Length: 166
Image (cartoon, rainbow, N blue to C red; front, side):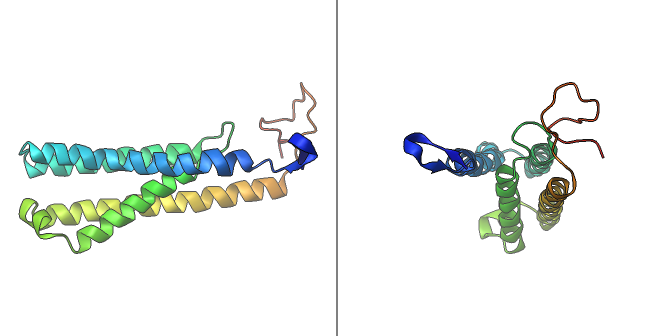
């Protein structure tokens, strides 16, 4: 532990739990709600339901791509789990809502469209959650099974991030 201000020990994860975690949750929720807001605006302008379904499917694909990109990045800060987790949570909620849709949803969309969007959100949620689990296990195993580089510059064996090539 590092000595912080006043000689007290400070936790190196304080920056994560106090800043990155809550903002990651908020960012994930806001990003997931953007397509919902877009669909609401389009619906208020009496856009064809087929167009709304395509907007939904494309939005789900983009949100899934964003989530996988955040999970698979290998830059400083490692992967971000909170934003993809919130997006997967949104997809699960959307899936459960489409299992028993409200009357206004049934009046607007055909059953086949609802089934399509429900299936696509379920697949996207499973993909994101499986990637979260796989990435967490991979990082855990990497940290447990590889040794850290001792910090010497110019070492040909170093592969970046302070780890030595196996």
